[in-house]
Image 1 (cartoon, rainbow, N blue to C red):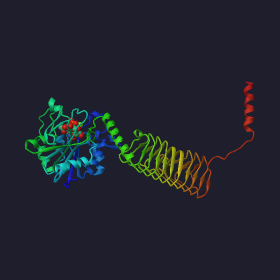
Image 2 (image 1 turned 135 degrees about the horizontal axis):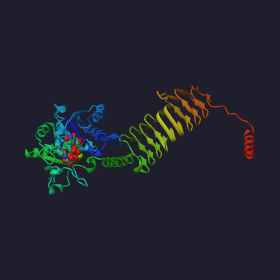
Image 3 (image 1 turned 30 degrees about the vertical axis):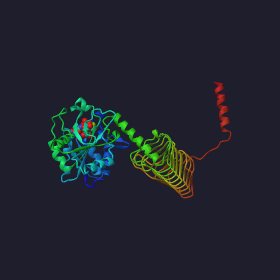
Image 4 (image 1 turned 60 degrees about the horizontal axis):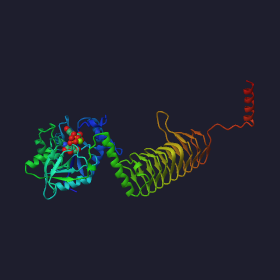
Length: 451
Ligand code: UD1
Ligand code: MG
């Protein structure tokens, strides 16, 4: 890694019209996180001390998304091209004297290691003035082309619109990612003009100007998948698929069993222990941690949840934010858990809603139990003690506490606290009328016959 400080300029002022969306293109999520935040994470991991996002169209949305991260924005009022966009970050980077990495907001998979390779190349003994990131896609489409010698020395940069047939036949494409010292960047950007097919200020023109000055610019190459641009919903879905494929392999390499990997969907921050088993069709939202030896059975949806060692969840479990299943706890089919802790070995095996609750160790929550946590205005908590037994089809009307070892009779509607070791029955008392059914049937059959 380079010891020179790094600043990143992320260009995101374009409209992204091909996405046909009210949501800004770079805020469309991949693996549960806006694509721009994937990129911000990469540049942070590469050691960027400063990050400036250049915004224009839909800027309020981007500002709202990056403000909590303490990331600065710079305004490009009119979208006049990528060089013009980069120039808008100058004021924000006043006094910065290190290496600048310019990236495009719609290229979210750029890896920190690639940025490190570029900065290392910039600081190599032959001291090139600019390092560009190139790639060779299967279909070079309308990407800008890089004409370079075998050793990576750039001879010419040309946009597709301005390229000759021969130049278009070149398969080395420009990803847009650029590494350059701040002291070189600003004077070069100042000199870029817009006398070209698009009438735009092109960022790659800084290379053309550097070459004209007799300086060296070089290309570093990377995988096409890392720098695919995302412009449409179809490209977004493709990018998601590639991300998921890679994450599934990583999960298995880390010691998780995925029975049908292609049906499991991870979030960007899913954490899995060893010997975790994930059955088919499981979807992870953000914020999930799964400890060693846990099993998540088919068709479960898990988000913002902690599953400790040896937990079993599903099939058809819904674990929502704040769900914590302590070691050996079990949650079965059609059970929803939200903002609730299940103690060690506690069980809720069927058809249950546990919201805003604490369930003590070893407690057993019967089928159809509902914690009634909401009165239409406020939320309330339910506490179920260790070793308690909640009979099936009970409604626990919060706020309410069931003591340790207490038993709630099936079908109860519990509105008052139950003390430790007590039995609570809160339902209509059963009445038996001997022979009543037979008499009733005889009477009715006779009436029907008389008609
Ligand atoms: C650009 C490159 C091209 C490269 C390709 C890689 C230029 C001139 N061309 O073309 O060489 O092969 O990316 O994907 O740089 N943006 C602004 N302000 C502007 C214009 C663009 O912020 O005035 C932002 C966009 O929001 C986007 C990025 O810059 O995130 C790239 O712009 P885009 O118009 O997609 O450039 P391409 O035509 O794809
Ligand atoms: Mg583009």
